Length: 172
Image (cartoon, rainbow, N blue to C red; front, side):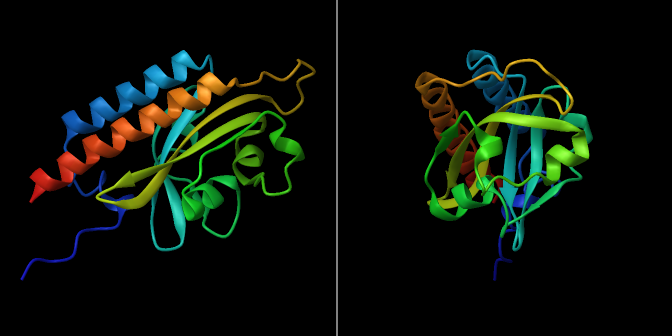
């Protein structure tokens, strides 16, 4: 009898998804981030009670990827994961569902966010996020996303979902 497949949060660290596939996923995330003129993005994969930052693009990635876990009962990315509905907002700090946990840890302010669910093997397995941030004490005006930026991340999420489908099917 085959053992159950690991939870999505364990796909990368367990080696179930191989290094070339991870590089391809990272490149798609990087291209979507660049096309959206954003400095930061991440791939979050689900566990039983949280979303884990599996990959990140931008100056803050090294400070949370592989170490930060977003509780499923808090934050917009958790709502996107639970609902399967994409999200784009340019005044994120005003949204009562925004979780400030990671902003506080990184000493930044998130001004705008795109969050798109990722479906793998017919189930929601994670979320792609893209954010405009600035230092928490910055007086600079906030950056904003456009509807084309959301479309870019929806396309990236679909591509990444299909790539992970193939990777998991060939992992055996």
